Figure 1 (cartoon, rainbow, N blue to C red):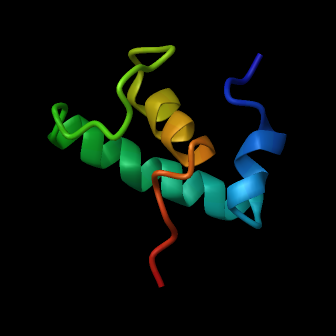
Figure 2: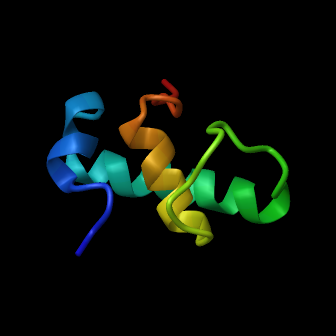
Length: 64
């Protein structure tokens, strides 16, 4: 099961496509800079899941 659920992700981001692109960019950043974390606690160690948790917590914003 996906954590965080898609309905939590869509509260902060309008489209699923945008969620995917934001998560991919953030996950790449976390790969390159593992100490650059935005949350105090994560439920997983995987970078993509951490990026999704940050999006659900409204820590990662869309760049225009």
